[in-house]
Length: 161
Image 1 (cartoon, one colour):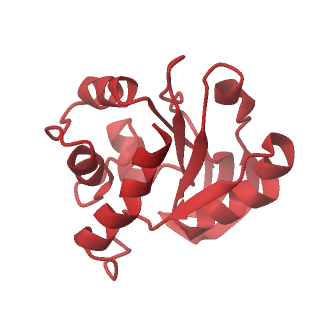
Image 2 (cartoon, rainbow, N blue to C red):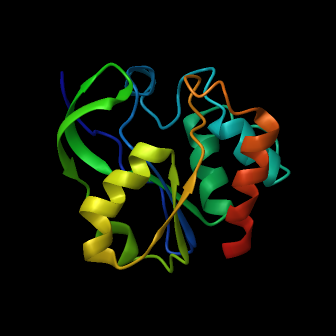
């Protein structure tokens, strides 16, 4: 299925870290925001590392990101993908990272998973020159990584704020 990314990037002029996924999952697209699957651990982990309550609504998640100087987007603008299977991606078209990098003092770029990291390295890094730091995926499909290991890995974000 051909999918076009429809979410705006979440950032402001004080964003210091950029966190990139690959492409919103079908559930995220249905709900209209990043990491929308109810079993995705992104928002619980982020709330935990920032010692804040879990942001429930889209507006709360955007406010959370702005307050904590975090930008959230995805590497891809469009691609062919089967469901939420990153390994099925074909014909990827990257987003223009300069949309954020030209407007925010980004100190580090993180990928939420191997595929996001690989795609960034291939399509975005040659243009940005900013290396990416790979974090484990928070997807429910990545059940082999415990919540504690996710939390420990995501603590690295705090080093750049």
